[in-house]
Image (cartoon, rainbow, N blue to C red; front, side, top):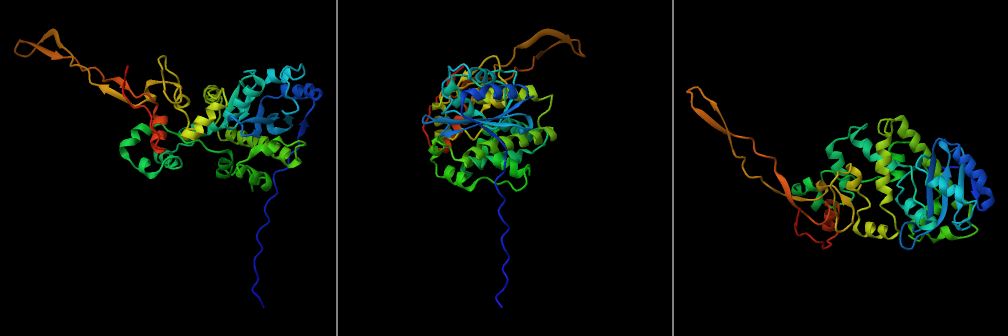
Length: 368
């Protein structure tokens, strides 16, 4: 008899979620009414190459707390930013007192600003919360942080001990699917194979098809459910607390609002800097800042490689004191701390990514 072969376990079906497809302006008043009653919103966008110069926003998906209600708004049908029935929804998006939960909201910010002319406000980006939790609630070690850098830089850079001080505060950002799997937030996570395959092909123009296939609408709605479940998980794990909430919102604002044009994504992709948490998000801003010649961010001096000039020795202390023999002795005051006198034109992240990509950049020392 032929040997029995074990059957492979059936692949789980994509997550099924209930949602409302919004394609008419007259649907919007009820949508805004329901969203306005929620303690927070979950937001995500879909479209063609969103955030890039070729970007076209197709859908804005918004869910209420716990994703109890999910609305998928057809932007191609609701494209008139001056329409009076759309205005309350746009006001909701830019209201800083309405908390919106996102995962990597950089492209969402860029697309909504480019399409409707309104900046997203009141964002809490879970991608930021996950990074902050590593050294905080999760008490990760330094070797774990450095290990993640291998996803961005090759061994020539990560194993060079002389470069480690320049990468001392570099943090690699994670993807939503990876965190869901790593933390087991969802059992048997499954996405629609057809949609995943279309994304991998690199041509996202399928989001512009109308009528939009039902599986694409369901895919967009499922992302809201996943972000909502991830947010609830972060709350349970105390990665987001009342104590760090305001800080996370401020960091999220700096993280997303940098992308005030679609062109900035092209630079981030070309330089491969998008996979690292920007240093103006890692550190709180200081009163005096300096501009990076490459990414054009305004940054603290510590975000650049600096040249330190040792201070001159402190003068001898002139106020004498009597020693045992009655003579007057002099002593020197402690030397002052070394202060930076020069900086590089480009921030440390841009400089390291340029080195990795063999891109020639300005390196002359600039006098402070």
